[in-house]
Length: 387
Image (cartoon, rainbow, N blue to C red):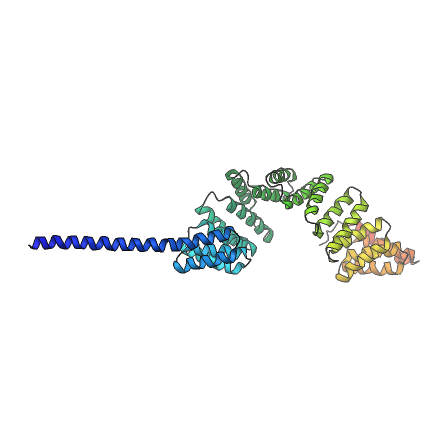
């Protein structure tokens, strides 16, 4: 009888255990779809670029499971897309704390650090991303960019080999990655390896023909190779798509000047000034110099005057305005401007030579002779590069 009771007890215990397991399984079936549904809805909202809805859905998912790294990563992506980078950084850091092997989370945080111009942290996070996903092409590209950024911030840190190796790895993993060819071309261009850079930009353009910045970069390479006609074609194509880029109008103007098309150069410098809302001072300087060549002395005087009004310490602008005054026959004003240029930069022989000519025109032969001697003395010395 005792044995029978024991047997009944075992059966009852087993039945209770099965019932418990069945109940917990049913409960899991109910809760699992609820949790995953919000994650799926959040991802769908991200795909549709409905970032506020994505935030809402991922918040529900995070409430349902406070230890869901995926929910916090989703919120980080939505915040990032909305431009709320500090919130994105906080969320992605929580995601990493919950899931420290998530390569995507490290990569997103690296992008956020890139926007803060912190190359050291970008390298650290992309290295972690690559550790957990060695085939993440974008992480290799971003780490290479960070190496390049780091060398710009601190010239003593030369990570050229590491950066180029990353880009070559990215190309090996994905031969159609236009970003890798672009970044490799930029690095080679900075090293004045123009022919190799040109090959990589040609490949990048072949893969991404609608990426306008690639034409801008390639035009710079053509310019470095002194292939100005080709540089003009690329620059013109870029300007068709970006007509409000004042600096590129300035660049195209300098290209026209290189090939001797001074009228078009003058027009482009004027366009740069117009688009730059009168604050593109380099365009004023270039147009002022060109106006002197074209005999437009009053334009030159006014252009250099505009620079001096904005920056009274620009010795070259004083020299340029002095030249304009000389051409207009105002020798006293020319002497005054050349004197100002000399006071700002006293070791430039051409400034003394110019003032010597102005003194001579003004009938001050002794002062002219003194400046001529000083100019000759400076010319005989080793050239000193201006800072």
